[in-house]
Length: 242
Image (cartoon, rainbow, N blue to C red; front, top):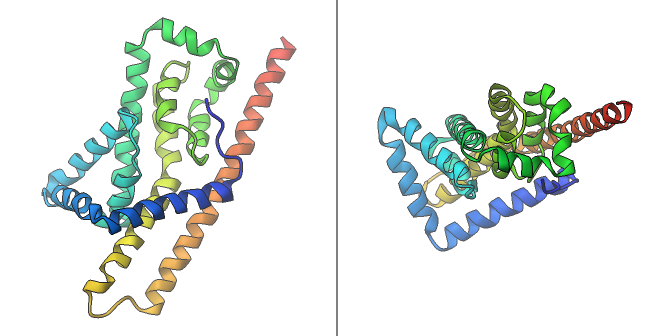
């Protein structure tokens, strides 16, 4: 698998810049209006809104397409709590489908090819016993190739239940972070349409929540890096002992 970005602070900074740049482009070319219209149409479907968004999000994951527009768009339209739930649910569903496609449709030849690479042997065998923990930790690493890894994990010995559990838990921090950015952008975009903007207290709450989300992402990233390094060392020591 490609190496993730080592510095969590750098990864968060890059993520913020990327999301901000995308939002700026959307606002400048008025593309955001079409995206928001689509999401608002989904939101207007009543009880089916959640199902539609989750299915769209799942399709994006299965097709290995960029999902940042939908993630931030969920913050635009649905808000932080509702948007985060939909994003995590849709991404987890898509990851589960990709996992099953790889496991039951790609065949043993694809598995043999993947397992022939040295790095993949470290995430199989012994590490498969910690399946949900390992999967969760990979989801916490910034810019880890999560969509591609769904298929790779499907070719490994990791259990489906552990994969889904680790994915669902590990997706929460970054999903909330990006949805939160989208919700802030929504407030910034609508300030000119309101007679009275948000109060200093409201903006202080938004700013405080933003800082807390960054701190949480950095802290979880460091825990993930240390834990994965520990699992890898344990696997190497186990192989040397035998």
